Length: 185
Figure 1 (cartoon, helix red, strand yellow):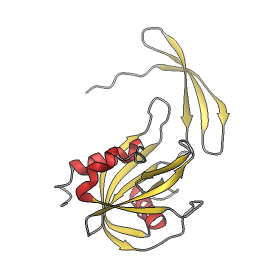
Figure 2: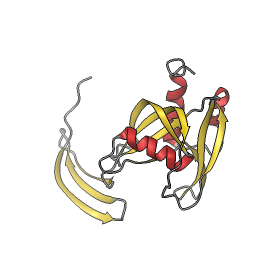
Figure 3: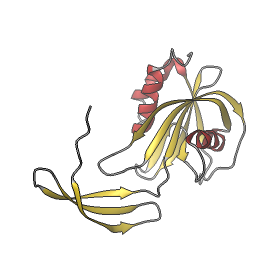
């Protein structure tokens, strides 16, 4: 499908900044002459990874951790930022070790996603992690994460679980379920 040429950027300025984000205002001119100002969050420049870890016993490993945006504990898959000089695969294995105490010999990429492309440019690579082995690294979480084992045979039930609501985790789960036979599950 051919890509339509984007609007002309007339002006771009930072209107707010935190340690994690800059908020930019973009003055745009569209091909039909319409002019608008859009705002977007510019992240630190680091992309991220999320993994669906599956044990040899047929369990999915999830983490329950506090999410400041919803002000509650959320159930989801291990995730984290890619450090400078790391590949997505290296970051995935490191984050698994930090968050659930396992590395993975096999990582299968599912998809690269963008959370909210109208406002945010960060990319997250989703993986299935298999052939797990025990190894713990110290992470940067403010408290120990609760690790939750969930039977792969009941994975679709996660979709109705109240605290499994994070869009990237839902996407990763659905993509993994779609690829179950290709993954040998």
